[in-house]
Image (cartoon, rainbow, N blue to C red; front, side, top):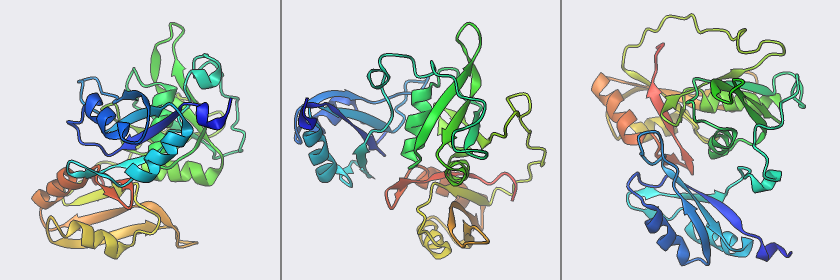
Length: 287
């Protein structure tokens, strides 16, 4: 079968919460034959802020990416790209967790991450989609399950390199998946769920500082200051970098004069895209 005859799925990110499946279908119907549209929702039935649009051919899908990426939808600028999350058809109709991860990741030590505090309904496909939304490529993922098939609330995810795994931790730790603030840390050989280290540092938040994750690699401290000065006076803004290479870690902190300004920043900018990346913003618990 030729490439143009194969159906192609697109990920459409940063859509308004109120967007319906019919509205998304109508928008993309202008680009070609839309085969299927889905907007995933959480346990409360609320949109997760992204959709999946499947076209009849890859040619139509490519045209949609070219035409619609960066398109304004309501008060949002949407992101449109190829959906890289595997489907059941892509793995021969088998469940995504049917292949158990080996004792050690193929890429070696430091390439495997522990994802904790997951919702019971979170699946491998959910995690892979979440990771690709942050620009991360997953080699393999497995949700730990009880003998009856129910999730244990944690998973192991393999990345190609230790650097990619570290980037995943810095970008996705404390990010939201199906209404849960997830834990992401490196998984060491033989550690397992029982060996998971617990954060023992006491929380000591002033309520004045926020943590901003999933930043573009090019973001500077001055860029952060300029963005968040829109909600109040920024006392300090830091784009965190590796000390040895100077390369951005993909996250930063912003300190405000008042707690009200910090909360306004979270409410106004969480999920807003900065250079095509949706920022993940939470109050700094340890400033």
